[in-house]
Image (cartoon, rainbow, N blue to C red):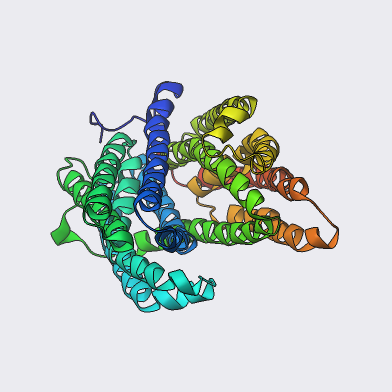
Length: 457
């Protein structure tokens, strides 16, 4: 399956191939976040504040859905990569055929349900009455593009399984450029406001889907997508759901817990909300650094575990943990060191800056600790144990944060005390997941030793 777009994960040195895999993923996350910011910038500059509020109020809803699909993408990545590690081309083809059907079913089902329940969802989120009409229009149009989003995300997961992270990045870049260009055309040129932004986003997602399908249809290896042969294979579907659904559910609960933390931040006033929002932008960029090495750990471990390369699995884990910690730690230390400059990009309000500085100092300086459970969780999923990191992370991070948010006003806690929940829960969750990883790893390796002989690449 070796081509110019793939990476040999089963033999040779690891640092070079790992960076070749991770760097396009880092660029993908940064570009995606930048394009999202550009959407908001266009609306804020050329429309009334109510239009900006209408677009912004949809963030929690869209993030919940995208997170679930990204979790299923992890399942696809693990299953296809494992088939490649076993050198089972027929299983690869079955997994890809199943992925094609799953993308269409998930996308169409979500499109229909979302279109029907867009307004009730927004009402449940207490969307202000003056913006709910525009918000519902935006959300319905976005839901029309969800089949495109699932096709792109699931197709990108298939390509990641062979180490191809570059072409999904180029495809996303093309869709993002089209999105921003159409934003300017529809909103600034034609005055279509919220509807124009939503249409631009949906068309950009459509371009992403078309390009990723064309790439997969032109593949020469077993990951080639053949639409006429698309069907659901029970074994492959079960494996994808077993690994991907817990990952998606973990993301869902994470998103919900962040909504509750946001409500607590808002209780400290508008300046706290604005300062926190400025700092969060840098946390998201740093999170993409971590996720890139998590994805590398998932893909490399999946292939090598299926091939029986136990020692190489250990090396993959150690290398990606080290690279994630260094990348996140160095970048965040630079941001905190120059926090005046970085916060100043978003605001020069003297009332807002202290809150931005507090969040940067308390959260960014310790964000590298999150690598402990993110990378370890990814490694466990690659070994076939997806529910374990999900349960631990939900209990250690999400539940504890909700309890902290509930208790804080009762003990008279301030903004800095609220921010302290991040490093505290990272330490608690990281310790628990690390312990679980080494326990699960011994169990997985014992299972491998008792199984029939594997290829060793």
